[in-house]
Length: 297
Image 1: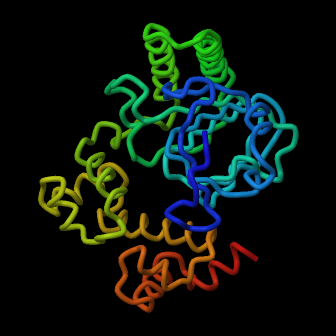
Image 2: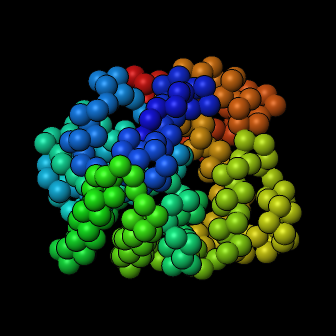
């Protein structure tokens, strides 16, 4: 991975782009936590990051508190994290205590296109952290070990031939399929194609429109049909999900940057800062200034 500058020119959040240090054209990297921390600066360790790739972390030793989008996730041996593209996180947290973990970093385009794993690779909300049972841990760890072994083989020579890359894709797919078999990773959203298309459009357009009717038109259905799909998948209306996404991005910018509130307001498509303030209070119960003071204090 490589820091590609500030996220949307927002100081405090490091935009992290995928770059394999072993094979520049390979959209996958398998690395130990201790190896990764050994090649990042102290400054990088203290910053929040927003990657443009998927990150799987299987804790094998030690403990840590990893923060992902304002939720602190305790990590102990057997904890599996899945950090998705765009999520703001602090993996190198000050409270890490002897942590060791297996990490798999990959671009959304690298795995094979399988219906079973599509929800994991989409913009659907899903579990960030889970504590695996012994049998679940054994299967996930074994597959990660196989993936790490083949990754080392593929990157040991002068180049990664196509067959080696294909094998890595299939092993990654095996790991992702195992994850879909874990409790809580399947549900109505997994088979709701309309909801998946809405989530994709929401991630692209939340800063330009907050109208449910606009999203319904973009995904080719009526507002009533979109609401029904959203409620089947999450129990919430399309409008509630849209507002929640805007509020989350507002919290990211307020907590992790020094951008003026008026600038945050404009970035999120509000015509006036006062309108943004009322929206933020309604969604979070706090004013933008009070929230920033609490998070940065």
